[in-house]
Length: 332
Length: 280
Image (tube, rainbow over all chains, first blue to last red; front, side):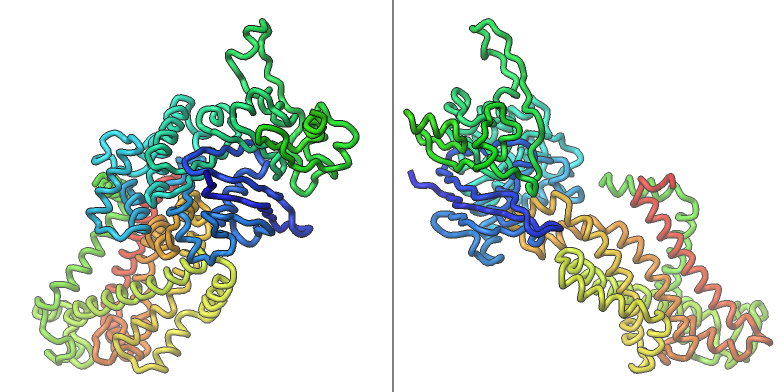
């Protein structure tokens, strides 16, 4: 199947006091229609900046997209004018954010906001747009949508607000939905509901989802492929199953080790212990000369500190940016 | 709707705000129905000049230097004052909100240009600028409205710009951007309603200051010569200030009541619209 969105060598920089600092470097990936691709990584790894670069909604300046291509059905979004780009937003690619509490306009009814979103994309009369808004609220499973539509956001719970956000994002019937930490601010039970909803809407609308999260549990639930980002670069790409069973990059291993699990190791009779990754993600302007993860990596050796490993295919269509996996791939 | 009820309950709590509202409604009532109750034209000479208030029950507020009915002047003047106050404020809001919204939303060079123009207006003393502008144009109702709005929009623009600068960073704006909403829609339908509270409060003060400016202009003889306004009356009475002070004092009291009422209402609105600031 051909991909609907292809990102090639995306590099985003922010101007700082000492010139431009690269925050996202040479990121490439492809999205297939109707599939879910997840980007995982710690805070500050460049996940959100990557997503916002796709939609070109970073404030420029200070941000600038220094290189790369974002091909949407073959058309490079980075070459489009602002007017044309606005037609892409919402219609081709839409986005939902982490904070449902602040992502809705406090002085407008939720219906009003959805109607605005609908009428931005389609020529509908006020009544038609309202009927469409009720239908959308129904689709995101808001009970009693006909009445709820006149509520103000402060009367809704976090989960309900996130549903309203999703309804707004779907108003233009996008082909791709970028979900930036869609469940982080929600209760665990509500998280599960929202994820189930996203999965169901995905099959109903047939859209691709680009899921941005630091929560591997969320990834396991709805994603098919995973990109692991560290310090602005992709360090591993793999199908979700392979990634969980056999992580190639030490950073991925670290992430998995830091995730609580219930069943794993039970047969081995050992209790799984949470292992944290020591240290923090380096500032983008203070990257070490070699592999960015080397200072925190338990398996790092001399070469890691001097030379930066490239992201190279390993096996089964996977990619990894680590000398260790590349060595094993070469010897195998 | 319950939001309105809440607002009214909060507004009602403050006595001074209620006094202001009652006074304002009284002035508005006088402006609307008053002219039918008093003699038809405030310019008509109807009685002997220098009639003190209370001397003749037919003219309870007396007459001016030419024998014109002062009560009629004050009642007709309320119309002129309120009309000019409201029209000038509406115009100033239109210009100020647009300038402030564009500057605050787009930042960068539009902001620089618009704010330099705004500052240019603000460096010149308001009233002097108004005098100069009226002197350039022919004094008429329309030109006075335009002049007053020309000197009062910069304050609105700065207020709205400040609100927009902070509101545009809010996440709901970002979520409007990513679903492809146009800038006009984001500015006027999404952000603007969020800064209505300070704008409403400011407009009541703007009406008051517009009335004062108009009175000042009329007092200096720069008002519309065909309109009997409170400032015109004070100007007429000035010649007889030592012998018949009431001629200037009575329209002066009318100005005080109206401006005070507007200020009290503005303060009440401020408290009612920002309940969190209540315990300052």
